[in-house]
Structure formats: structure tokens, C-alpha cells
Image (tube, rainbow, N blue to C red; front, side, top):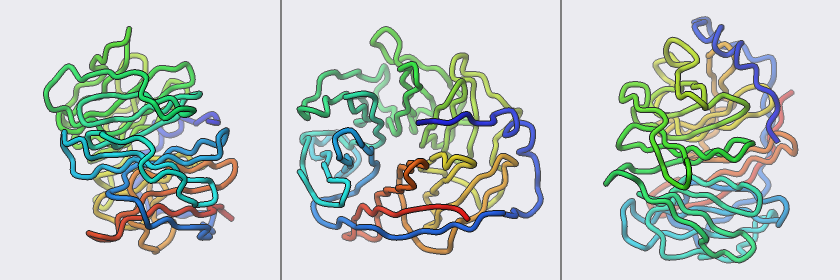
Length: 287
């Protein structure tokens, strides 16, 4: 699904400080919204092979056994509000083959999407890592961000081991994106890393705008990155020059969304208010 990303251009040009000038205009069309059966939806995973969308529901961040994963149809119908139950604050998810990998407080868990059964669990080697997002490279290498301990772990020989430990670069580390040999991490700012060595691929963060911070969701749209932020209700687009701009002024309140740039389907969990929790699907294109 991933196309080649011009990592060299991203590294070389992100110091640019001029105002963003987008050649494309975002066209965003609402398709459907689900607003029942969800509580603190955090992340989604689109499963085109089975015609399903999985949604993690945090239900209070902690080891409380109240979290769950919902299963929706591609048309926005609730197939199972509590498809997998008894979880501890499930957050980031990623689909790999027939398995769903997801962060669950202090564990990485894997579920079989055909049965909904958890088939493997990998505990954190520390007490309170606050596991957040999961990304998987095309070769099957797994990465998971730890927001509290400011680390990025990888799964090696069925054990979670730290790959990157940098308290400054990984402040509030959150969303992850991986392609080729590049690993991109969100959080207070966006950094890019060599996913094999854990070394930074640039001398500093990609994002240096004062209004671009605390990045949650990160997705590739075929030409640039789309990002959501904790304290900004809009979606932004980050170009290869390191300059970001909102794609619209609409208040999406998006958390960890997923975008399939082949079909243009954008699916996002949305926490509008204390009791207004939704998942919405849009068609997104650029003209």
C-alpha cells in the first residue's frame, strides 16, 4: 500500500521557513458517521479484505479491563460494538495480514481478525510506558511508541526492546508511520529515524512551526503527510519542505485516523465533547 517516500527531500528541505503555498485544494466529502457504541475512540484500522473497520475504545486510561475494540462495516454499520472486550486502554492499532496489532496500556497485543481472539501478548519491560501507537514495516518489523517513558520499542525475538531512547526528541511520543527504512514519530514535534539503527535522519525535528505541536495521528496521502494535533481540531498537511498548513478550517476533532490514499477513504475517531464520541468516514482528494 505504501508508495516510495522521498525521504531525502524531506530531510534536506524541512528547514524552510517560508509561508506554506499549497498547489492543491482539499476536497472533503462526508460519507457516514457512527455515534453509538463508542467511548473514547482512539484509533482505527481499515480491513478491506474483510470489509471491516476496527475501532479502539480507551474507556479511561489505565489498567481497568474496561477498554474494548468495536467492529464496523465499511458502510458505517456497527457489526459488534464490543468485538473484543476486557482490555486496558487500547490505543494505536495496525493491521498486518490476518492479525490486528494494538497497544493496550503496558502490553502489545495481537488479535486474529477472523475470530476476534487475542493470540499473542508482549508485556512491556517497564512498569508504566504508556504504550500509544503501533506501526509495522513491510518486512513485519513492529514498532510501538511509549509516551510516558519517551521511547520507541521494537519487537525482537518475541520481546519488546527499546530502539530509540531520547527524552527530548520523543517528548509525548505518539503517532508512528513507517515506510522503506524511515520511521516517523509524532509527539511534541515530528522526527524521522532510520528504523533499523534508531538514528535520526536529520539534525533536528521536521516540524519547527510554533503552531504545529503535540502531533497525534500521522498518515501519508501519496504526496505529503496529513497530521492531527491534540490541541488543534483541524487536520493539517505537512509537505516535504517541513512546512504544514491546515487542509480546511473544519473542526474534525480527529484522534488517530487512517487514510487510504488509493481509495481516498479517510476514517477518523472523533471526540467532540465529553459525551460526543464518533467515528466518521470521508472521501478526501486534492485538486
